[in-house]
Image (cartoon, rainbow, N blue to C red; front, top):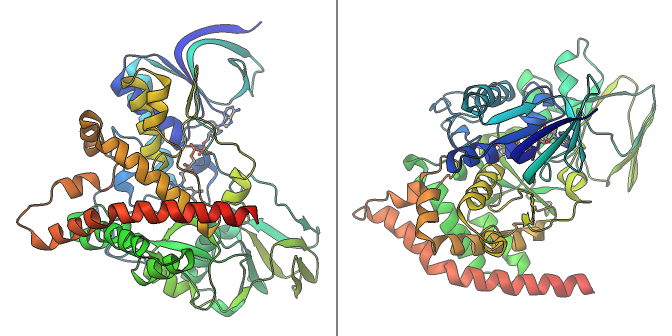
Length: 472
Ligand SMILES: Cc1cc2nc3c(=O)[nH]c(=O)nc-3n(C[C@H](O)[C@H](O)[C@H](O)COP(=O)(O)OP(=O)(O)OC[C@H]3O[C@@H](n4cnc5c(N)ncnc54)[C@H](O)[C@@H]3O)c2cc1C
């Protein structure tokens, strides 16, 4: 017999998106909320992340709006030296646990059901007891759309013979005997993290083979620092971005200009990236990764056998004494099959990206709009979907959608004020606090203003070109 529960909002998922959404909803309303999640603790994929994971962006604007995550420190050592602290996976999990207990549950308005599978139609079931629950709710919040596959839980889409040594990067710290070499599979952020960790531990770069089916455009972490000391790189990178796009003669030329201006980085100057997943990296990390010379660009892995690795465009040798490190869980595989749909649809809310690269801010924004605006049409207008990029050219519709949202938000005084005071917003405060007598900073802002409309125009033109190309 199913237990009957009643609430205002039934939220599926207590990952970053679910947590950031609920936090803002609690602040903005007096609603009651039920949160259901399969995991034992809040934090989503951070519960199963590799032990050496850290955030890719400064902690100061990650997490939920009401609670600081950053220690307020500037790293003094390592490859993030001189920049804002990056929380470790353990810190992120502890933080979400704290938010759940001290804020959500302590409010008396949130009920949390961990270790439960949501099965649809307001029903969920405990994985441990089989007990089922039926919820009568006002709104259902599906906070799972942005959920991503991670190496520890995904199933690789290639064959691995039992004789081969194969592991997700999570298991690297468990290695107790030097292998013949390491083969890292995947050119995304987890592949980068695996290579950086091996190099940091002292593995000879010659002992690392890195299978990168595609090279990526990367973002420079120096441009993501939300502090006055980094104004010229962070806000300056927006100015550089607008100038590069606004004056670009073609799509290819736009990427060249974005790289020249320091907006994009890449690992190998001789290989044109075709992927863009918004992975963020420091220049010191790029230098380390460039020490790895055995880069295999032969497409995707099809099979790992005892003595060879079969790829879509060739075969390379391996041995049973090599360790093959799985970093192949990708954004493409996480999102490729998902159909984006309006965030607000009748009694269902599905938080998605409304500002590129910023899932936490986006989820908080969706909750604010839900709480403060009346009609579905107005809510969806303010929360236009910003598509998640995969190919390099996806940067175009992504940036265009983000700029259109930004413009719509700027027309609404109350919303503008809320954004400025939201901890999850990186740069608005920084820009708003510029002293008008500071000519250097004012010059950066003026470059942004001067190039905004040409940037929009160029992105619209390139977007049409992309549509034409896809017809051919
Ligand atoms: C290595 C790494 C580093 C990252 N660094 C950053 C960073 O620096 N900055 C940043 O902004 N983002 C970063 N991200 C991305 C970010 O942390 C989030 O992963 C992303 O936005 C997705 O969060 P989510 O809550 O949608 O998904 P998840 O974390 O996957 O959470 C989804 C939750 O939904 C639950 N769930 C799904 N289906 C059901 C169901 N049917 N029933 C019950 N529960 C269900 C799952 O158990 C899970 O807990 C990083 C991601 C990775 C992998």
